[in-house]
Image (tube, rainbow, N blue to C red; front, side):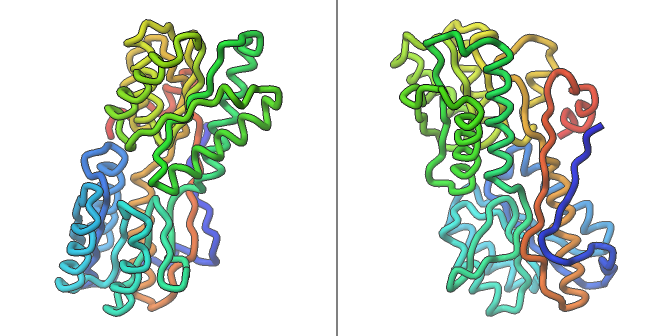
Length: 323
């Protein structure tokens, strides 16, 4: 049984989490309706209730201005700590400065940010490059196991959100790991496909790409999240490609239930699952302990990923299908 494990890069322990009264927290996220963030915020709320903290949350829908006004409002309401998923990492210095001036503890979730002078803001999330590398190694294993090395029409579809640095680190990690495992792969067969982090965007972008590359009959996809990869797979289905012509490995597990739960064959072969609920819980725990003890937050708290596919779906389905 694979387990989600937390590895903290700073010498901090959650064992001393305080059950302090009158701690008010804020949680800002960039895409509140997405299953990933639904679970993440639910985890934060549940942990705050357990600790006796008050918590206010806000979905800012990738809006930078709303992010800043929300932070100002939370500070004005007396929060002592804020967890934030920024819609744009460029907001880091402004967000960090606002929190510092107000004496508010700040932790970045999912997307790491830097404050003034490039000082890192305490961060909890995935090691983007390494999780991308896990995807690339699995793509390469499937490429070899399925005998695709004998085909000349294989394309590597890099579904990219270039405005999101974290996403690009995942994608670049996947690409580097795949090419390291398959050194003879023709790099001219890498097709870069822009999308905006949503499944609808991936479907549209990959549909256009498939039309522009009619000779390619075998596709390998990697992306920032499940939405990018599943959107690509849906596009191939719409264009008449069969599951055995597609290899895709997602990241986050948020769309796995809609694929593996059907029991039907799919080019969506697996996902690197991270328990986003645990991220929300841990962010609240870290803020609570730091506020109660007035100690620095750990610099980095990483979460690791487990590969979920048809072979081990039964181990994860109850958790993933309840998101």
